[in-house]
Image 1 (cartoon, protein in one colour):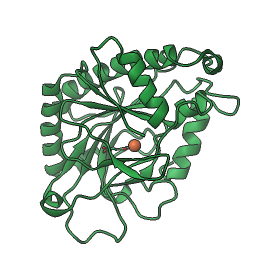
Image 2: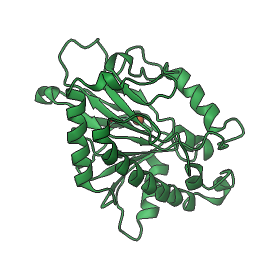
Image 3: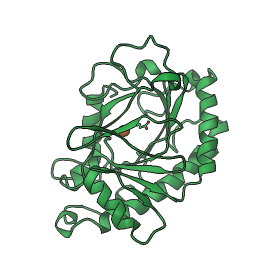
Length: 279
Ligand SMILES: O=C(O)CCC(=O)C(=O)O
Ligand SMILES: [Fe+2]
């Protein structure tokens, strides 16, 4: 298994991208349309936000799930017993966002969402007809007008050495949503589990973008596209002193979208959030 690194501008990009998702659940895109300077600026501004002591004032609203989630309430991955070593901010266009960060992060949200619609179109076009008949509507339309798509600004603080034994930055998990758009983080650490059960680093240089399949696309494609287990490992050596920032956009369908005989997007999401202990 190898996660392919695909040049977004090449003629065969669509085929190579979707083949990689089918094979591994992951693909990396280079020469994609999200401006690197925008990402660099977002990382700088949000690093200052997490360092600044103002985050608690933006603490999340349990009912709507927008806002700041401190380390002590962060997720426990399904099947794990200790919390991940992370804090994060949930950005929704309808949610609360610090005014000084708002325009820039929403600019990014819209651009990444538009790219995701293109990529869902690619996935649809490359899905074999016998699988595509099960899509109840075009994949790109499933996210149109959705209020559920979530941009998570993630901060993994430097390790202090007093962490709970066994705690990692992000324990092994699968994403719940259709697909995830994840720009290269400012530090390495992302790993994907191969079919053979080995952990492989996802090579992703600055300026590149990871795309991965989530459980909802696996469900809608009856398993044709695998939602692959991944994690973020703790750094060793001097890198332990470094913060790591990442910015996954989780593409969620409108709640009423039918994924399969068993599930709408809403019933599926609620089931998974209960398992995560955040609902
Ligand atoms: O921080 C990363 O690189 C990945 C984060 C992730 O997998 C998640 O939040 O679902
Ligand atoms: Fe993830």
